[in-house]
Length: 146
Image 1 (tube, rainbow, N blue to C red):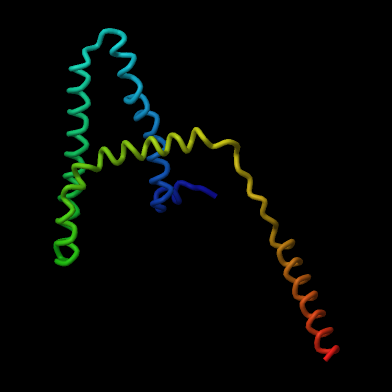
Image 2 (cartoon, one colour):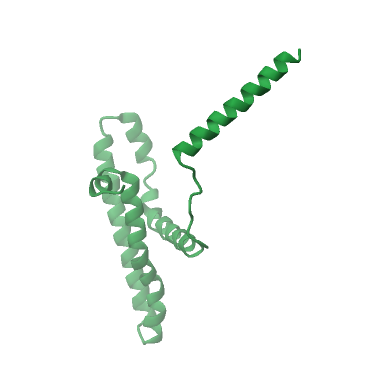
């Protein structure tokens, strides 16, 4: 059962919730420029806005990068390995943009809701008992025929 405590303590639940929540605003920023340009908005201004947004995402990534360095300072080997990946900070916004497309396509291409065809514990236990009974009979028959 999903609870508020589960939401605040489980990293994967939080990550999925954030990714799915932020997908819609990303889509707006993806398709809104077409409407804006048609309605007379300057394409040059739109390009500047996108560049500014990208730089803000890089700035946020740089802050995370610096914060991770602070936490890794006591571990020199991990720190040295992490510092070598500084260029990822510049590429991360583009990577997240591509992943949002993958997430969107996955959500749109979901053909039908999935239902698990699992059996209950009683059904599983009776199937196990039946398998053991059948195998035991087979072993006994093979021993008697020898």
